[in-house]
Length: 201
Length: 74
Length: 229
Image (tube, rainbow over the protein chains, first blue to last red):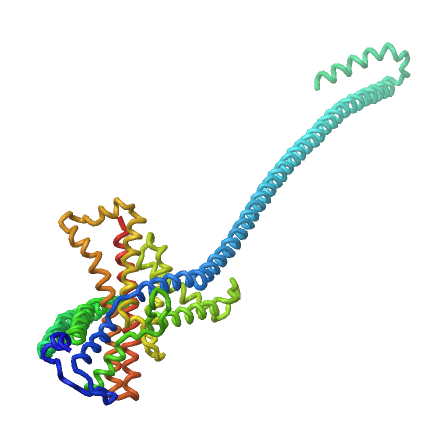
């Protein structure tokens, strides 16, 4: 009893009634109150329990929540990347094929041009040759014609000479009333006369 | 004895005055900033709330000390 | 008034729920039991929600879950910076845990963050994480040298930071939850019908979530500051 009174100081010996209607010492009551209050702000083994709890919770979240979500997002990204890769590869192939077609086309174009040019050249040469042939032929025909005309003139002249000689003979016959005899003697005279007539022209 | 406890607890909570003034000034500046540039009000609000929560901490410390004084001293 | 004070004091105390009979009886407080309940519920919900994930033609549930998780992780990662992104998983867990723990007052349980042990455990783990991140990023020598940045004069303050920072984190969270709890109980004594719900909306939901976010934000800020060269 004595140490209790020194502990509690002036409040020792006071008596109050608590809820159950039991009278207790006020000092005893305050001590239990203080012990109970200390429970509000105490630090004890529960600290370690809480640490363990939170670490467990972090681990569990990483396994059950963050893990699956991150995995799904990564898988989706991977699939998207694959699609892009495939699209890129096929576009590349398309580009290459286009290149190939372009080169083939240009080659064909060139070949076409070349063939056209050779054909044209050939046609040109052919044309020239034909024209040349025609010209040659024409020249030949002209020269032939000229020679022909010359010879015809010559013949006609000769005939004309003969006819004139005959006419002169006849005329002299009629004039002289004699028959011309001996054609050969007078022939020389007539020929001389014709020549001179011819020269006068 | 218990009157001293009461006075001590009262003085401990007096520190909440600083928090009140500080948050009031901060809110005034935030409203001014929003008035100057209304399209930034989302960011300003976020910063304001964060600053208020941090500034309130000192007031809370005072409150906790007052509770401890009331509970622990007899 | 005595009855009200008595009642509140009763509620404020963290009661021991059961005792593990080893080493002469270790008392397991109710905060730990509620933490177990929270853990169980969260793990169960996450297992149920991530069942049958597909890559295309996703259901609405899967889209919502992916959105939430990606947003949360993105939020924490943006606060941590690039090099600290590896710690985003743990910090998001802490965010979710404190958020749920602060809100659980609505469902009738006693919030585990009302217990000083829980908040102190969280704060201590945060500080250990910050120092471990600093050591992993800079090596032991760099970490020790980091105490003398930027001038050698501030070394005692930096060392003091090791103590004051977790203390402020812990006290901020504890004080907020405790204050909310006391005021809610007082309101319930006055008018237990409608008023508690309205105030609970502010105290429990808004304040609880905000404090969870502030806790994680400050921790990630410390980590970012400790990692950067």
